[in-house]
Length: 187
Image (cartoon, rainbow, N blue to C red; front, top):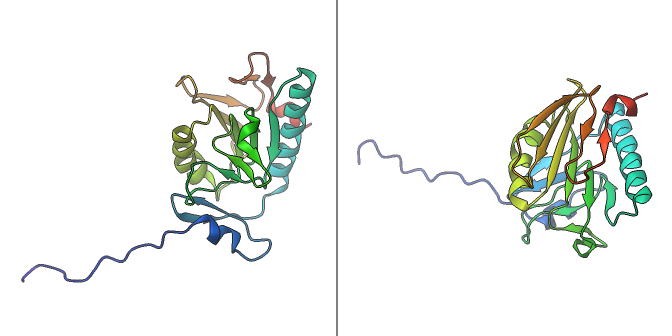
């Protein structure tokens, strides 16, 4: 038949969590909808922000007798009840302890914070935003040290997305009295 291409379309392989656990020692990756996204080692400012935020959140929760727990990456989050989604957010805050087991978090954390880098920006602002929203994450922050900005998504209330600078006081949606100024964490 004229004009018909009889070549079969090449299909991309669908990966599972078993493939993530089969990676060579030290190699980290995330799995979203069966597609593997390799992770590169973070830079120093990334690690400083993670350490300072985890410390501040842990202190806030402890000082307020809160029930939530804070985990820095690498910490496994199995977003859906399937074997095709596995992420390691930079920071996960989980308030429902029944979601926690020895492997990590089964289901959506209440609050996820990602520190953007040039290699993760598309994933953080696009694919992960969609996955976190549909999985039931209540609040999602993307901290961008290249632009000194923070995008705050109040996913629980479908509220307007807000962008803040590192110098501004940023209110957390899941806690009514927690405000964070990122610039203070970098002193």
